[in-house]
Length: 238
Image (tube, rainbow, N blue to C red; front, side, top):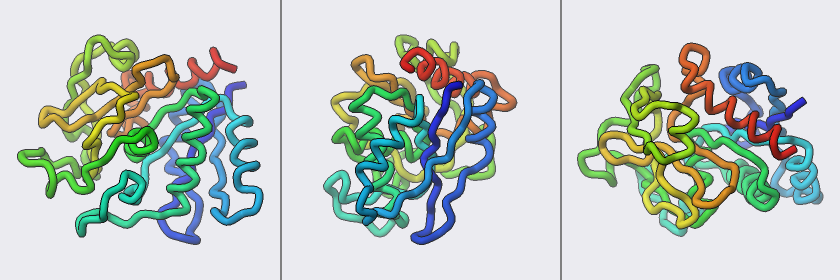
């Protein structure tokens, strides 16, 4: 049985570890067992040991959405429009991501997961799209299933999965990639140029999207295909 580890949603320090149900259901539809990974206290004496055991206990990873990353991680000062961050979650996600890259564990990054990937690999973010990107469309539509469309590069892995050049997506983010990591390539953009998906230039089995495919996967097989891809890659690399 393929096991996919889901990075914990934690939005308040000392709050409740949680997981939106659509992530769980999307992994289940792909035929794998979703396991919600606990948020380890950042000062735990066996933090690194337990993180090593965590990465070795799953066949793939799903980096979920959530709070803004702390700007210090990409060497920038915080601007007033940057939302709250949670160092405890930043540390946990960074620890999991670095281990995933080292052992080439397949992963899918969603929303914050895309931003995490880019920052962990040396890239940076727009801390607030409306403030920092001229003529950008409104990317914050929390209650709209199909907020806008993205254009997908025909030569990308994403296109081979989705089998479509245009795709309607959700949009509820105010941050996005600014400086792209030199290890990544863009596989999809919104019509205003905002980066909506990335993949690796080498054979690293990772794919990241800025939208929330889990919210659309039950009704649209093109979005479910992303979770099917993750599980398929996890099977191949067990």
